[in-house]
Image 1 (spheres, rainbow, N blue to C red):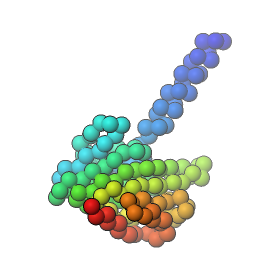
Image 2: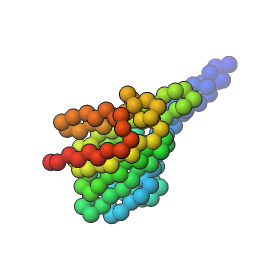
Image 3: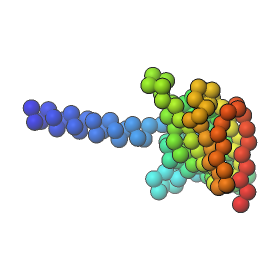
Image 4: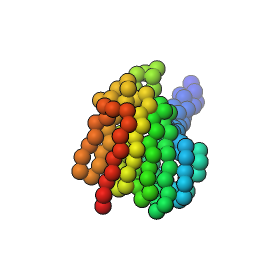
Length: 145
């Protein structure tokens, strides 16, 4: 019985580890040099690179990329942009929806998918001087240094 409880505990812990690192989207298009800072490690982005919550995506000069999230929200990063995926949850079965990001520098184009249409109060983009609550379907955010 004790061994059974240990195995169950191990499986629950393993499940939590995978849940935290679940892919929430991917790099849909890419031009130039784009990097992803994840848990202190710098990853060179490629087409199809899977993204996770807390990833910091950085585009270099003459570079850009598009992120396609599970709910079909598309965020396009212009050159010299730093964007952080702060929070993301798309779970229609549990009715859990959330999309939060932060633009530290640069410019993004936000093109909404399902989350902003279902739960617009759960979507926002933070900048150094403002937080944007998303009610529309498409907008641009630019942060100057």
